[in-house]
Length: 177
Length: 374
Image (cartoon, rainbow over all chains, first blue to last red; front, top):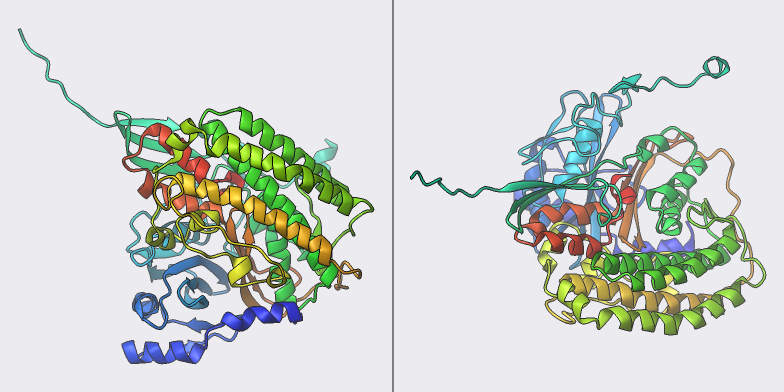
């Protein structure tokens, strides 16, 4: 690690504090996510995501008032959903990881907690095909309304044609003709 | 005589995608009540080039030119965000001279980006002259950046572990000469616009975003600071060498109206240009000699894991989320940009505004369509 970058981790939050707060408030035993290279990260089961997020936002020692980013990663049978939260009051950040099945995966929408989640979840739905329960307006955002499939899934097949436009990959034999 | 019954109804108007003041290819479907907007639905995605999908198909180094295209008004800053994320992931150490060069080019790019933002906002309000002045100064910055990397818009200047080229002879002298020339000109442009009565009338007290609302929607950068929240990634979570530099973070104070109106966001940008000039001068004073890039393996295989890195670009902090499964290309790259969140606030903000003020709102948020759609 560069000494210049090492200074950045001063704002890192102690993960045990968060785990204890969630245990006190909800009685849930959460685990730390070890795959985060930097900063603290915790794994939340999908059924208790909404209540944990509510605690993270409201608790006076945490005050995560901002959802910086929401995204997903398709890995084999699983869909990994990442939520990055930030607090301006304490200047700390946390990553929340929630794993749902890749096929027919469903999770509660957090757009009732952070309004900014509306568009972020729409993008995750559009590109990865995760269904967010209780989302007010779950429509495609980047792709056209009539697009088939979700392009950022690993099992996505590139269409050969869209609206009469040929999209077959260009091969050398084709160029010679 | 039968009297026809008069009735009133909402009228749906289409704005864009080809519209001069939407700053790119964005479409709005507006439901109006006379001249008042009742509901405004942005329709984005016209510039979606699936950059995140492309990232999964290529080696780590090869993705850098694509980050230029994420935000081509400030390509240096977009380069930097991605490079920094991968460097942290792979544990690459950047030489100090490279950090200084990175700050210099990024701040030059920030000035040119803010000049476009300010100029375009004026042009949307009907003032054409300031736009020409702003773009003339931007040309000089493009010349300077061309001198250092050979490109004028999409630079591909940064590499993993440093920068591609050292500053050529006379780069320092030419940049300092430009700054000496630019500072009075900036004052002039500032005076020309900021104190203009018509411009103030169009921007003052329009589309007020409170600090709470800004946080709820995760506004970032100058848009957030315009609402009075003093947060700058360069200052609050300093990366690179920013903690050794002396600069201020301007915030909206309700300069001519209410905190968080269009005018505040505009003034924050104008002030940030001054701070960038200060930063560049300090960098030239302090810049050490030495290497400009660390040695990085040609076939890079960072350890498996995920990381979310934020850097301050002209349109607020750009978050690069990278997930790595230990292979030669990223498993997933997610780019969360400032324009995206600024756009998502518009449906709530536009309600009750005049149609003409919607143009002012887009201009004051400095929305750049390619960054929005990626």
